Image 1: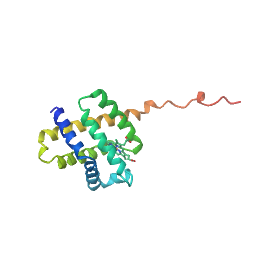
Image 2: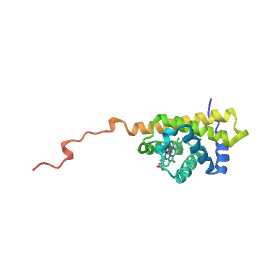
Image 3: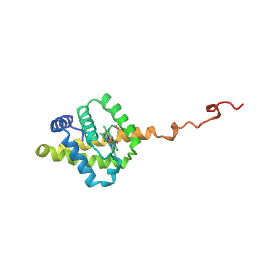
Image 4: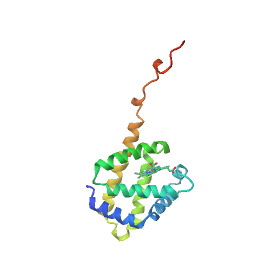
Length: 153
Ligand code: HEM
């Protein structure tokens, strides 16, 4: 099924109004259900909650603006290499995000909304993962050569 743009946007706006507690719930959910990723994050999550919250809102707001969304996601994906983020982690984040949205949207959370968010998240995660893969491809390695070293005297 296709992504229902309006559903993503309206639920994104509803979540935006709820504020950073949404991100607090998300991390609490993720660290409870997937404790193995806790060590990847800092002890104090205050800043990270705000960053993640703003990022999810940005993605939802621009879900129909590919020229903004795709470069943003590519940078997000390559930026996550330094955190040692692996493809399997994206499934953990996705499940935690979906459960968080369901929790906060309550009666407004419908099957169609769930399907749309699943599709949107899977697409966003794929762009991040592909960009990280591309950035790490061995073909980008240009072997060091004698030209890289000053001439011997
Ligand atoms: C589409 C999914 C994701 C979104 C929207 C997202 C968003 C963000 C944002 C906006 C930041 C801060 C800025 C930056 O460094 O880029 C960040 C940092 C971080 N993310 Fe993600 N992220 C996602 C997936 C993941 C996954 C799958 C993991 C691994 C479990 C992860 C782990 C981290 C870590 C460890 C940091 C750094 C925290 C710190 O040291 O302050 N993220 N993420």
